[in-house]
Image 1 (cartoon, rainbow, N blue to C red):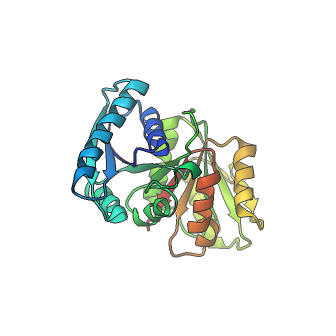
Image 2: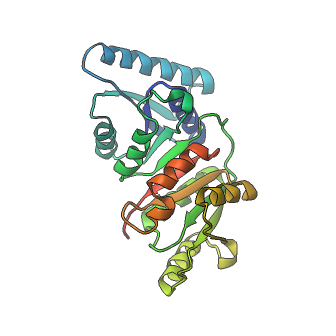
Length: 266
């Protein structure tokens, strides 16, 4: 059974992420760990429990009572990031699902800087970021972006294969042409393509222009991509391309789900 952690602050964006995940995994047996972060041990714990009950009732009302899904309600108190990260690690989560940043909801604790801290701190499982105002849509094309400076770990390949099979989608590899083109990079790329039974001509080669965000967004739009996937490298040159600044900006501009894979060595 899949273990999926969904942090919630009862905002629209966190509920939308929960709603999307319930649809995405409707055919799979899952335990959804709905985690709320309260400010202290007093009345806020009672309010948290009531809010968790309400959001679970709302989901059942909106999508029905899925017998394959278990809903587990958890209240955690600060420190916010450490609480979520420790919970994900301790419960061996397979995935964390969060909503993206919404300007009208800046007061909520899961947005902005804290959301990006979660990306940096939660290193044991992938994170799926869901845009606020999207309806659930079948994923037909899933794109993976890399410059292949590092080999894509076997575990991350398995995660991508899982999502491809889950959604019955087509994998579109997008190679970043950063001008290096050495033998090791080519080997990493070919190993990745081989895992998906793809050849070099199946990959899209995209040069790195000055405006990296615009380049990615244009690629997503042109190819009709339904889910974008990247590996987050915290201490690597690739950070310049998909590091905290790029991921944070993509998070606010992408209109499709954004799957961020943790850096794992083979």
